[in-house]
Image (cartoon, rainbow, N blue to C red):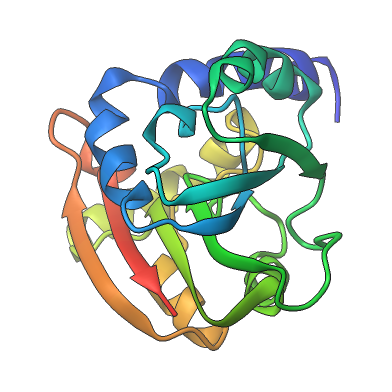
Length: 203
């Protein structure tokens, strides 16, 4: 940790991930959320305006203090109760089967032990509960993957540990989830190296 990671990076992440071009993705991924929701990687609250009426409460897991400060106005204005309920997606402070649904947006690329985080999400979901996700990661095209592997060390240094080369659907399946919906595509208007997205639902 340091000044850049703690103070600067949350603002940069808010600008990039909070861009209006991502609104349609957030609307899609939040559709179907219901009941008590755990959001791993709450960030600066960019999903807050997209929770459907079926959501009763959100428990946000986010380590960055600055992220929560940026999110404060959104949280205060939300019609859905939101609580800060954890700092580490790899060790969730909840009992087994506590949540109806889980949400992860542009988060699994960065968590150091992503397998541990997915195991924790699975643990705290009720039987039949679903994980809703939109993440960037390993591209489907080999020509793009070559550049992702070349740039990945730089990306990790400047983006707080963010990886370009994680195969998100494979990681979710390996954690014991059944992927029931999946859309893989490139985000228009963004270099493909950074724009290979996976949006879906896993049970």
